[in-house]
Length: 226
Image (tube, rainbow, N blue to C red; front, side, top):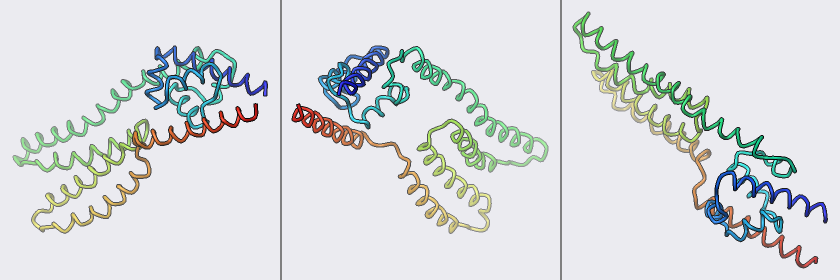
């Protein structure tokens, strides 16, 4: 029993340290997790422990490991710089991705101008094909350091822009039927996107409410034992 109290105190101290390092009040943190500031205060003083689900959400929010919350060691000096380093990577990712994306359109423009000057022919279709090619570039870079749910939108644009490009390229053949291919492909993308979509605020709130109920049940059990 004494050991459980020690763990509660350690977790509470770490949660307090992390909250202050983010310059958040108990009320501000409570609003983010749909709890009362009284619950936050109890966690930080070690009077009660949040459920494992809430602890996991807190560790993700503070960008620390779940295990580090239970260690009686300085947590800011080791863990928080990782978050800062991660934030600093965003401009670098953007700097690398944008040139790769714009290079597709630059190449399309160069080819358009060259063909116009050398062969005196208009190659406007190249700008149509540049759309699906740009999507392919975005898929590659999104796979490296992007967010999975963004792939849903990129794939949707890729499917329909490719079908439009093929139809316009072969407009003499009147291939309107080609758009039927996009329907099953879009259904597959929608089903896949439903599996990886971000949880809604309602789902997060419901999960937190369930966690809060479990916490209250645990507190009542502890009081009954005492």
